[in-house]
Image 1 (cartoon, rainbow, N blue to C red):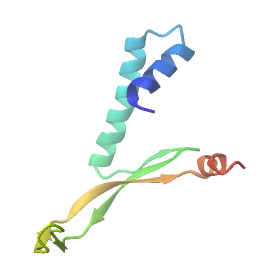
Image 2: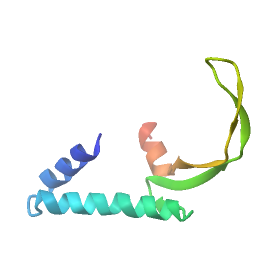
Image 3: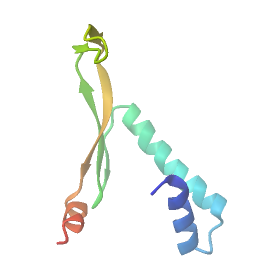
Image 4: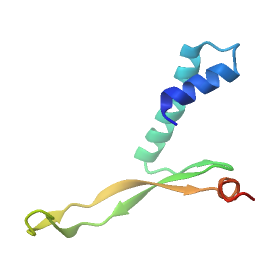
Amino acid sequence: MIRSELIQKIADENPHLFQRDVEKIVNTIFEEITDAMARGDRVELRGFGAFSVKKRDARIGRNPRTGETVPVEEKFVPFFKTGKLLRDRLNGK
């Protein structure tokens, strides 16, 4: 599901809300999650999962085309861990 499909589904299920308002709500939620992760905070949505940031240390990588070694800087990457309720639902429990 992409963002526009999510917005459309929420708007269809809530006919008393304007689609532009639903779009603002969805965008605000995503922006808040992104901002919190940029600050290094963890975002937990009970029953769904938790978003966090993991640090990847600097390392020596390899260019697959030439085989040449290249330095790779340290970086931060988003990480998502599913909640128990979501895992159970996916596994048919």
